[in-house]
Image (cartoon, rainbow, N blue to C red):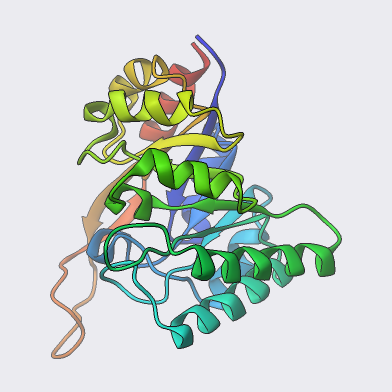
Length: 246
C-alpha cells in the first residue's frame, strides 16, 4: 500500500502533540470543529500549536455557514493568512465559492496572493489547501482544474459525499483530472475506510480522530449547551497511521 500523507484535524496543542506522537505528517488547526465544521483559530492558539514541532496548516474561515464571502470577509481572511504564517504556520486552508456553486476565482486569488506574499516574507514555503468548499461546488472537476491555475497545492474533499468512502468515484475523477493539485480525502474517514479510499489514488488522507470527554465545568447561561469536550484520540491516530503505511 502506498505511503500517503496523514493529516489530523486538531483544536489545541494537546491534540497536535497526540497527532505528532501517533505518526501524523501534519495537522490542520481550527476551532469549533464539531459545531461548525471549523473556524479560524486565535493567534495565541496558532503560536502554541506551532511550538509543538509538527507542520501546522491553519484553517482560515471567518464564520460558519456557506462559502460565499463579501469583500470585507475576504479582507479579514487575507489578514488572518498573513498572521498565521508569521506565527509559524506551514500552510493555510482556504476556500470561496460564488452563489451558483462555481469557484470564486477572484476571491480565491485574493487568498492565494495573501499566502504567497506571506510565504515571501517568511522566506519558506507555504502550502495552500482548498477546503471542502469544493464539495459544495456545482462541478468539482471543473473547480480543481481552475484551482490548478490558481497556484493551489491541494484540495480537501469527500468527493461530495457525507463520507469520503462514499465518494470514491468523484475522488478518482479529481485524481484523474491530472491538474498537479494534490487530492486529500477527508470527511468521515476512519482507519477501516482508508484502504478503500487509497484505491482511488489520493495523495493524502485527513481525519479528526476525535473523541468526546465530559466537560468538568458548566457553561452557564449564554455559554453554549455542549456537555462534552472534543479531544484527539491517540489510538485513532495510531490506527490511521498504521493503515496508510500498509
